[in-house]
Length: 272
Length: 360
Image (cartoon, rainbow over all chains, first blue to last red; front, side, top):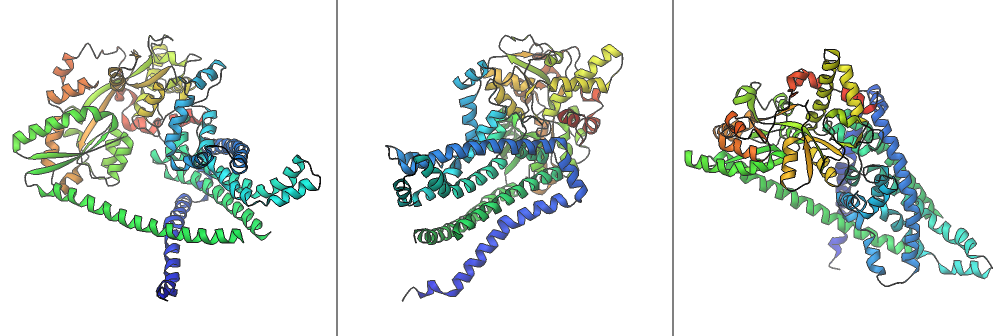
């Protein structure tokens, strides 16, 4: 065999070391740095930074809005995935590739689109203001921005599960006399559930962190429309790195917990 | 079976991607290095050609764009040297941080004194910088004004009108935009002026209450003056608190707004300074200092005036007097006690601005 050198053990070792180093330098060190930086003044300073009314209100608002965005995405994303897998229609493959667009676009472009589409001069904006509703620069626009950037997560998590789902299970259910609703809730939904959960958690943690689109469409007023990521930006800009780091590690810890939960859900799925 | 096959394919695929990524990183970092070397060499060569690095705040971009070619011609004629410029435009505070963090600008043109002070603190500009050029090293002036929709439908004439219920106000956040401190200073100062008229003395508590009343009507607290203006252009809000030059520049480009000059407002002064550490490193002190002086010549001042700034040169200012009315209650930063006082009372960690934001 002339490709034995490719199979040499040294390669595996080299690859493993490179990947580990890469991981260490790009992810572990910066994150550890943020933790160390934020706790360098001691726990009381950290608690003080978090207890700042502007800070905790921003975190709370972000959690609330991210939750709303996630619920919307779970509903729409599940339906979209269903349609993309189960139905055939012209333009389906194009639609399927468009789903990933929010990942590819700079999020600021997403923000700009929201401004143009929902702004006071737009049709939607005018209709809303006639009803006495404010969209852009208020909370609805933040939710829309979060939904936009996290749109692909739920769809992409459910799609492979639906594709893998053995239609014979479904057919068996019908043959045994189950109604469509019963089949959906007892056969199809359980199969999709891990995807929905992990997609929702990914979407939630991404929504927590969204900056580019939100900063453009939100009014950024503390207590009303200031989200955590924009707060962090403001604190960095005004030379309060400790305050920024404190909120950062709160978000980091949350995201880390969520990713860990996703991992749990997925390993449980692999075991069964 | 199927899942396992997909998993292994995925693994192979991701390893390939990783390899490509790493290759890219190596190539890119290599590029960055080779690109930065020639410029440093050009700056230190000094054999007839010289490179001057300008770190400026974004609003000055249009005016400097006109002034730089003129200085180029002037310097060529005077010394025979060809000056090439490297220009960078950022929000004033961001630019100051960039220069302090290692962006080697020879000349800093910033929005407010406080941002030059950041460079002094970093040990890059000498403490006496205000004595090195005329007018305390301030190259332009402006005032804080109010912009309304065409025809001023809400009848806004003063900062007091901003407290009326239902008036939607825009200004940037001074936490993220150093330049926005002028806007907040103007509102706070107008409150002080009002208290002086009613109570006979400056009352900081009344001024703070006034700032709070205006802040009640805030519609969007953007991260920079530019972002605030953009929001106003999208149709958000009824009134924008901004600089006269910024609004004049927008109106010159055809935006349909009314410019309202409040009776009580603040005089803005924009500084420029030679960054001593970097000019000595690049050997560009002579041309940098000449450039700073050039900004005070009638030609340069005329360009500033054309771009909406109030010239510091008295004869040029007199020529444009009709365009730049002086409001009766105009005050400068000294009225608020000077920059260091303003920084500690208004913008410190638990200062008045923080209290207004947090609602305490």
